[in-house]
Image 1: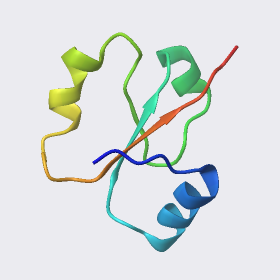
Image 2: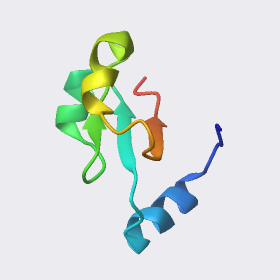
Image 3: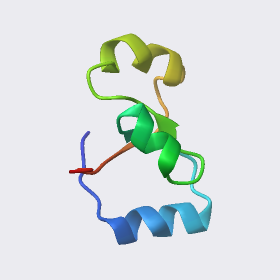
Length: 70
């Protein structure tokens, strides 16, 4: 199931300590400069290569956070 959530809902999940994997879809230079606490980096264009290692638990809730650095 895929759902869209807003910033407020993501912040609430983080504040409650909900269990989920947070992946930030950012180029490495933007991730190094600024990323959300506990977020893992999943660079655009490297999803197929990196996702299996970042997502070993196939039943885990995953939140993808994307933003336009331009």
